[in-house]
Length: 211
Image 1: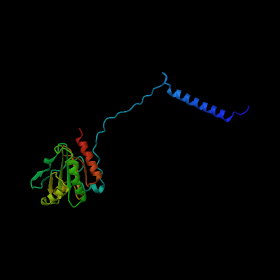
Image 2: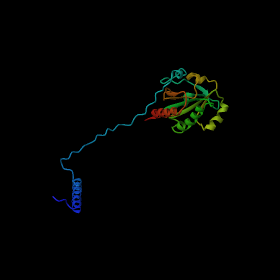
Image 3: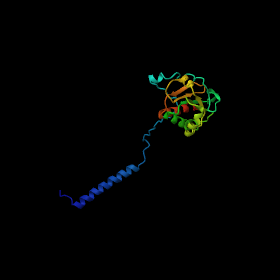
């Protein structure tokens, strides 16, 4: 059999290709038959995750510096405020939560904590529900307005000039921050202040104030 001329061969190939495309298009345009199977995908819907209070982890050395811990009642503390009026700490408690910050201005972590307490607690939450109280350790009341003014810390402050109040909760490490529930029980605390402390503090307060 003699070979086809080149033009005839190319015309035949193009015709076959065009026929294939036409067949593909017609198949794609066809509607699914009645016997076609339909598949359903089940989606599991879960409820909102309830916020939880972070667990407190302490090294053996840090644990020895603590006299009270989670699940214990916070000690009864009566100290003068900046104006010299003797004040019961319990009278400053919030209905849902109370943050107590022991601090000394010579520590940068304490100064950072004061700034964050103002923004993250005092300004963020309803003060009747969540209160924050600073306890200035080994300080004179007359020195505090200047320090607090520079840091824009407006929340209540008590003055622990002798360090007696600090000795009720622990030794050394400042700043110390405690969160109390509505009954005055310690639910979380830290004996330093860092970004992790700030994050866990917020998580604790959200858990305590969740509806």
